[in-house]
Image 1 (cartoon, helix red, strand yellow):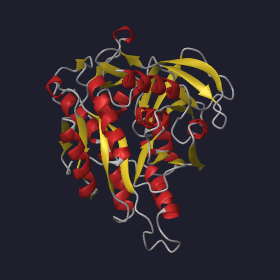
Image 2 (tube, rainbow, N blue to C red; image 1 turned 45 degrees about the vertical axis):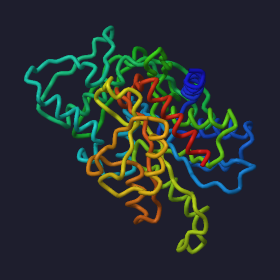
Image 3 (tube, rainbow, N blue to C red; image 1 turned 180 degrees about the vertical axis):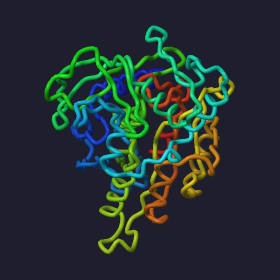
Length: 387
């Protein structure tokens, strides 16, 4: 229990540091300073942080996790807009609803099966705070429902403006309503009081809720960083770690590729000069967590973009078997993951596997995992970091 309590404490500590998508520098600098205090070598880049132990020169694994979080931005028109959509438009990224992650598609499919034109969202979709009276008007448009769900998740939420370089918190606001424009690919929000001049980048303000069964908060994917730092604290992390940015807009693979090109391959980028197995840590969205499978983890043999490292996957499954930890093996032909993108973009030159923490209420400030799953997530990562 003390392990989980401490991981939750670190998660809360980390959530207080701003790390909105593309504006993660305050959090990267914070992690860099913290890792140095724990006696680790660090290499801080604009887009990622790499750490390794000073004493172990023969590391075998690289644990990678993203540290960016969803939030809001004031656009050129002075509107408060959903940050991920704004960045995709600015970078001219392919903005395709076919690219929505599998959980989003499942939500659309489920909602479209409901005949009632008005239906309050329940636990099987996203937990809605009763006092906020968040409701969704059902329409037979997957695109509109997706935009509506984003609006709902971020309405009646406390937000804080911050300096994107220093991380200094400026002012706090609360969103009170939203509007959508499918044509402009935009979800925008009003606040209970006007935004002050100079307030442009925002973080979501939330606390971690922890009881005997569950942990809730904006835990994707700060909770994985908290697990790694806890293992570092107790002196049992003997491998390397990579904290990446921009995962929520599909660009974190660039950080992983840049790291491998700089540290793993020779100058001509034609030959691998050292072995370092890649293990990507993340949360995995579910509509509900079956009580019968309490404590399970999510593993994959691959995704729609590539097949993962079979040998490394077997090693993780062996650990779960030895420790009697249940896992759910997600089908390889469903969904797209960060690792799949890495494999695709490097034509298989970089590969690895994933360990995922099952959660509900995906991409909200009340994303939830069970205490048992978090305990097992920690146990497997801790064991794997020793080998």
